[in-house]
Length: 210
Length: 106
Image (cartoon, rainbow over all chains, first blue to last red; front, side, top):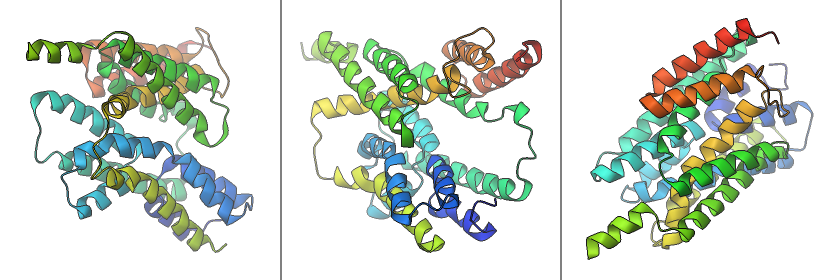
């Protein structure tokens, strides 16, 4: 607090914007008196990565009606996307489920509640949880737990490793642009690996046709 | 700009980005290369978030046996590889971090 926001607007920010990085950067920009239009544009750039998530999750939601899509889009954070897409890709092998959108709803609502409670705790308790507990590391560990089991084929491993390296090299780019650059380079390199040697999936498809 | 108007604009921009391709791809059949590219989004994005967390805990690259986050993260990755258990991976990683923080001077 003390960043140019009242208790009410700080709480409201977590439900209106509901995007961690954009909120942290937004608060900092509001505090330093940056013009509103610049803050809104910065929010757009910081959240560009969600366009990748939107494209990636779209095929799984295409049979839903608009109300579901509007609701689930609001809940599409990094965390909800990560657990959901891994579940969906895992399920895809076993066949489609007609109720799978409930999984994204559950993940999204769990994140939403956690985020609102954390915001309230942050506002009223401030920095009373000692930083030596390193609780933020649990987020990185969650991503590790999700990422490692999906590294099954060469294109995926190539995409992951190259994206990781680029993310480190480009970490000092502003507005999380390093993350988008890393993802795009990683995907391109993964595709190049697929083109060089047909994946197992292609092999089994061809075997099925014969 | 009024702070409430600003918050609403930030919220609308965020929402529009998240909704964009869910709605736009509705009646479009995506070419196979795009579909394959989208399959690579999860591994690429996840490691792009993880690597800087482990390799640059203070904002700069820190390759050392005293980088406790890197050591705990690698151990957690090994646990994830063999067990595929999310809660166990987080638990082992956090305990490893606390133990390393207590043992390794920094």
